[in-house]
Image 1 (tube, rainbow, N blue to C red):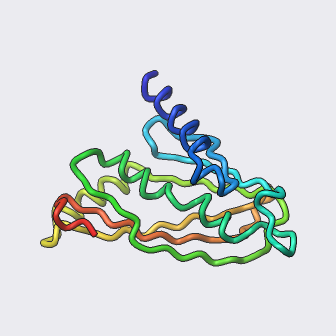
Image 2: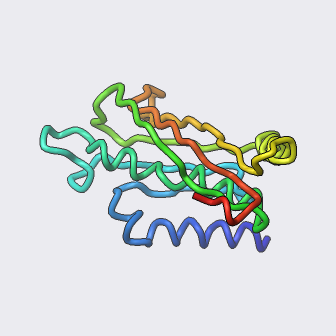
Length: 157
């Protein structure tokens, strides 16, 4: 119960936080264990570019923080997590509301922990991809993020 309330408060916090709010994106769901996050990016005068399609900056910014946040929340305080790099591929102009669904399953968290235990550097890079789709499932953009994870706070970038 407390975790569900906490995830609702995080959702509300994201949607009210000025830097995220100005992207035009809205967080519609955060799982209580942070294994899933859903985002909606409405096509409106706030997200429209000069030619009338969804602004690419809004597409990217609406998706930016979630892989890192999910990893932070899933791993806990004994780990340092940073966004390291990102890439966006635009595939089709957005002229309608777009959606993204992020997942971070238990197996991924176990793999990160195993990689950190097996490596001599105490740090790993993980790569994640998320699609921005319309209601019909057509992909409009794909974002690829690299997330840096370490157990050594002195090695954080």
